[in-house]
Amino acid sequence: MVLSKRVARFNRVATNRVLGPLTKGLPGFGTIVHRGRKSGRTYRTPVNVFRAGDGFVVALTYGPQADWVRNVLAAGGCGIEMRGQVVETTRPRLVHDEKRTSMPAGVRQVLSVVGVTDFLFLDRVS
Image 1 (cartoon, rainbow, N blue to C red):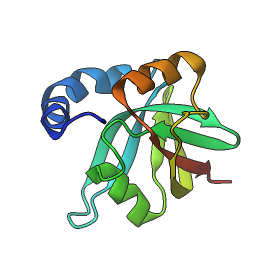
Image 2: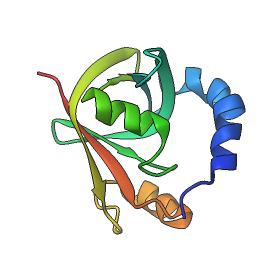
Image 3: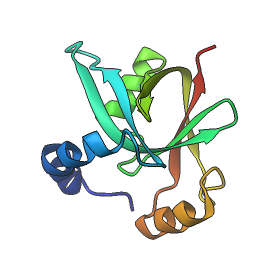
């Protein structure tokens, strides 16, 4: 069970506005910078993001059908703002992992409670 659409709407309106500025410096957090598929508008979505090899992995707490995930997949990448810099990414791919092996141990336990089993992997643009 991933987080519900009701929680997603609340977070988009309230929590993201508070967390957005904080994600720039907190470990395990970042902001996905992406463009809308239809509107072309630039959006900024706070996420849990971790390094994975030469790229990144994002926990999909709202599932793989979230609008921002579909935007990133359609565009073939996005920017990830972490610690004051934006890293461009490419080759987005969805991975279903019930054991959450790409996550740090403590995060793995929290995601297990929420039921997150889907992740977005992104490669850093060289």
